[in-house]
Length: 546
Image 1: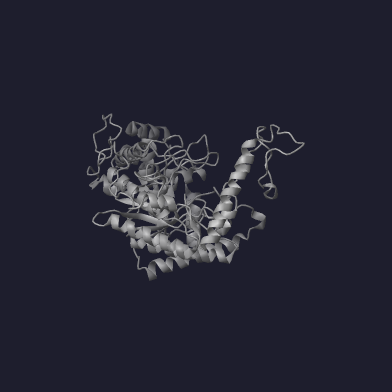
Image 2: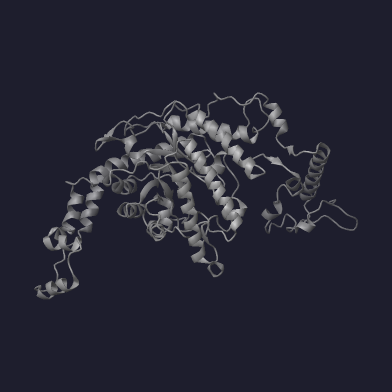
């Protein structure tokens, strides 16, 4: 990513390759910053050994020369130098708003049925097909995640980027990628093309993913305003709007200790300002919810953490956000969401799972203002199944949305893979169908293509597979939760004793311990306990899922 650079960032090393040398015997040992000065690779009385690779001396000399020239330009011109100036000049008239990033795909991915072998067609997702009296589109409310689709470059903690998407490459007639703001607009056009082809009207974004940072907060806010207005232009005349927006409060260095839970009040202030601006952007684009994911709202080292204070600060932060969203922006009826996750990158996050987060909200009187956006991969990181977290959120009347993805049990981290298992999708959607949906929530594909998948059509294949899995899961879930179906019959039988007069009396809170003790003493023998019939239930599910 190119950016405007000032004096401080020019004189600092552009790339610290020493960090990647490790113990490779072909290169010299990593140096300290004090040692990192250019020098001739040969000096009198000293021979060049295998640990004195000339490549690095020439590189150091070249780096120093480039830095000197840039500093000279700054001093002579009296202004910061845009490192993309020549690129901007080359692309003089701007970018082509009609360019197509998926030329091999149909304008809209069609539905061709379960027997189709066309990889660019839906086999199960038919937007207009009705399930239990409502269309699939209304039930599922699919959303595309900007960060995992348009901004996923394939990098991971162990490797550099592998993907070079066409919207990030040099446009026709340009020598290199466009300037940052033009690049951001080009990415936004790619996002809207992807949604059109998938027939999806909802999308989700982080503020820092859609617009580049500036040198100051004011410049960063101005960049966001410009991109939001551009997105609003693209939305005009369509049904497209965000399912939710969110503030990225975890990537920048000042958030290393957290945002709302940071030990620094200055960081708390910066996070509050960023959330306010992200809420403004979400409202401007007609977003239906606003989401919080606190990747660093937790701790890395408990002995130096004031856990009570940090939790109280987080609650105060949410109260301020609630007041601005509801009172200032008048967004009543558009829920605020919190997305639970147990850890990663923090050692422990305060929103560990659905139960923990719901308890936190109730402890601080926020349960009426927030709902929970359940992510499947986060559920498994917490030691739960995704269906457990969904069922728990529904039972607590806290379900606000679903991030549809899955993890790899052999990897054990947040891999954010697309869910393609029909059985898993059916179990996840069963509680949602039973509770008659979750609008204005929806199903966001917080999922990304694999590091090795570098073809632009892989993004289409991934979303098609995810949408098909959820569509098939919806139809299966409708069968599983049928009140007259076999599975619901097993469940009713398990709780049949509670429909008695005694059971109803207990549920209404009208029974006492003394009364129940008397009944227990009068009872003849041990309590009657029926079979759980789990194997039968498993067979029923298998018969439905196939």
